[in-house]
Image (cartoon, rainbow, N blue to C red):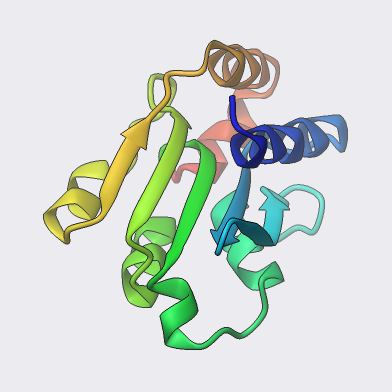
Length: 145
Protein backbone atom coordinates (compact mmCIF):
# COMPACT_ATOMS: atom_id res chain seq x y z
CA UNK A 1 0.00 0.00 0.00
CA UNK A 2 1.55 3.31 -0.97
CA UNK A 3 1.67 6.34 1.33
CA UNK A 4 -1.05 8.21 -0.55
CA UNK A 5 -3.58 5.42 -0.39
CA UNK A 6 -2.62 4.86 3.25
CA UNK A 7 -3.48 8.50 4.00
CA UNK A 8 -6.84 8.17 2.20
CA UNK A 9 -7.54 5.12 4.37
CA UNK A 10 -6.52 7.09 7.48
CA UNK A 11 -9.02 9.76 6.45
CA UNK A 12 -11.73 7.09 6.14
CA UNK A 13 -10.91 5.78 9.60
CA UNK A 14 -11.00 9.34 10.95
CA UNK A 15 -14.52 9.83 9.57
CA UNK A 16 -15.67 6.53 11.04
CA UNK A 17 -14.20 7.44 14.44
CA UNK A 18 -16.07 10.77 14.29
CA UNK A 19 -19.35 8.91 13.68
CA UNK A 20 -19.33 9.65 9.97
CA UNK A 21 -19.26 7.62 6.79
CA UNK A 22 -15.82 5.99 6.37
CA UNK A 23 -14.71 7.36 3.03
CA UNK A 24 -11.39 9.16 2.69
CA UNK A 25 -9.57 10.81 -0.16
CA UNK A 26 -6.37 12.64 -1.05
CA UNK A 27 -5.40 14.73 -4.05
CA UNK A 28 -1.77 14.30 -5.09
CA UNK A 29 0.24 16.65 -7.30
CA UNK A 30 3.94 16.20 -8.08
CA UNK A 31 4.17 13.36 -5.56
CA UNK A 32 2.80 15.50 -2.70
CA UNK A 33 -0.57 15.55 -1.02
CA UNK A 34 -2.12 18.94 -1.72
CA UNK A 35 -5.54 18.13 -0.25
CA UNK A 36 -6.97 15.46 1.98
CA UNK A 37 -10.39 14.92 3.40
CA UNK A 38 -13.11 12.56 4.43
CA UNK A 39 -16.86 12.26 4.18
CA UNK A 40 -18.35 14.82 6.57
CA UNK A 41 -22.04 14.72 5.72
CA UNK A 42 -22.84 13.57 9.25
CA UNK A 43 -20.27 15.65 11.12
CA UNK A 44 -21.09 18.94 9.38
CA UNK A 45 -24.68 18.13 8.42
CA UNK A 46 -23.62 18.72 4.83
CA UNK A 47 -25.48 17.67 1.72
CA UNK A 48 -22.34 17.42 -0.43
CA UNK A 49 -19.19 16.85 1.65
CA UNK A 50 -18.21 13.44 0.34
CA UNK A 51 -14.59 12.39 0.85
CA UNK A 52 -13.49 13.38 -2.64
CA UNK A 53 -15.26 16.74 -2.44
CA UNK A 54 -13.63 17.45 0.93
CA UNK A 55 -10.13 16.60 -0.36
CA UNK A 56 -10.54 18.79 -3.45
CA UNK A 57 -11.96 21.63 -1.34
CA UNK A 58 -9.07 21.33 1.12
CA UNK A 59 -6.58 21.56 -1.76
CA UNK A 60 -7.83 25.10 -2.25
CA UNK A 61 -8.15 26.92 -5.52
CA UNK A 62 -5.59 25.54 -7.96
CA UNK A 63 -4.51 26.41 -11.50
CA UNK A 64 -5.97 24.13 -14.17
CA UNK A 65 -2.57 22.50 -14.86
CA UNK A 66 -2.39 21.27 -11.26
CA UNK A 67 -5.67 19.35 -11.51
CA UNK A 68 -4.75 18.05 -14.97
CA UNK A 69 -1.54 16.59 -13.53
CA UNK A 70 -2.92 15.20 -10.27
CA UNK A 71 -4.06 11.83 -9.01
CA UNK A 72 -7.08 11.42 -6.76
CA UNK A 73 -7.05 8.56 -4.28
CA UNK A 74 -10.34 7.54 -2.73
CA UNK A 75 -11.30 4.61 -0.56
CA UNK A 76 -14.64 4.05 -2.34
CA UNK A 77 -15.79 4.19 -5.95
CA UNK A 78 -16.83 7.81 -6.70
CA UNK A 79 -20.53 8.65 -6.88
CA UNK A 80 -21.94 10.70 -9.78
CA UNK A 81 -21.40 14.01 -7.91
CA UNK A 82 -17.75 13.29 -7.17
CA UNK A 83 -17.26 11.90 -10.67
CA UNK A 84 -18.62 15.14 -12.09
CA UNK A 85 -16.11 17.14 -10.05
CA UNK A 86 -13.25 14.90 -11.19
CA UNK A 87 -14.31 15.42 -14.80
CA UNK A 88 -14.89 19.16 -14.38
CA UNK A 89 -11.34 19.71 -13.19
CA UNK A 90 -9.77 17.23 -15.58
CA UNK A 91 -8.14 14.98 -13.00
CA UNK A 92 -6.64 12.25 -15.21
CA UNK A 93 -6.25 9.36 -12.77
CA UNK A 94 -8.31 7.99 -9.89
CA UNK A 95 -7.12 5.21 -7.59
CA UNK A 96 -10.01 3.53 -5.79
CA UNK A 97 -9.76 1.42 -2.66
CA UNK A 98 -12.82 -0.67 -3.42
CA UNK A 99 -16.00 -0.85 -5.47
CA UNK A 100 -17.70 -3.92 -4.00
CA UNK A 101 -19.84 -2.18 -1.40
CA UNK A 102 -20.71 0.59 -3.88
CA UNK A 103 -20.02 0.84 -7.59
CA UNK A 104 -20.01 4.48 -8.55
CA UNK A 105 -19.57 6.10 -11.94
CA UNK A 106 -16.31 4.44 -12.93
CA UNK A 107 -17.54 3.76 -16.46
CA UNK A 108 -18.27 7.47 -16.94
CA UNK A 109 -14.76 8.32 -15.79
CA UNK A 110 -13.29 5.81 -18.24
CA UNK A 111 -15.51 7.11 -21.07
CA UNK A 112 -13.91 10.52 -20.54
CA UNK A 113 -10.36 9.15 -20.63
CA UNK A 114 -9.71 9.01 -16.89
CA UNK A 115 -7.43 6.17 -15.84
CA UNK A 116 -9.24 4.20 -13.13
CA UNK A 117 -7.36 1.78 -10.88
CA UNK A 118 -9.30 -0.36 -8.39
CA UNK A 119 -7.19 -1.84 -5.57
CA UNK A 120 -9.84 -4.14 -4.06
CA UNK A 121 -8.58 -3.31 -0.55
CA UNK A 122 -10.04 -5.75 1.93
CA UNK A 123 -9.57 -3.20 4.69
CA UNK A 124 -11.73 -0.68 2.79
CA UNK A 125 -14.37 -3.33 2.09
CA UNK A 126 -14.48 -4.44 5.73
CA UNK A 127 -14.72 -0.87 7.04
CA UNK A 128 -17.59 0.02 4.70
CA UNK A 129 -19.45 -3.23 5.42
CA UNK A 130 -19.13 -2.58 9.14
CA UNK A 131 -20.48 0.95 8.76
CA UNK A 132 -23.36 -0.09 6.48
CA UNK A 133 -24.34 -2.80 8.97
CA UNK A 134 -24.22 -0.37 11.90
CA UNK A 135 -25.94 2.61 10.22
CA UNK A 136 -27.84 1.50 7.12
CA UNK A 137 -30.13 4.55 7.18
CA UNK A 138 -27.16 6.95 7.10
CA UNK A 139 -25.60 5.01 4.24
CA UNK A 140 -28.87 5.02 2.28
CA UNK A 141 -29.11 8.78 2.74
CA UNK A 142 -25.54 9.28 1.55
CA UNK A 143 -26.08 7.45 -1.73
CA UNK A 144 -29.57 8.84 -2.29
CA UNK A 145 -31.64 5.70 -1.69
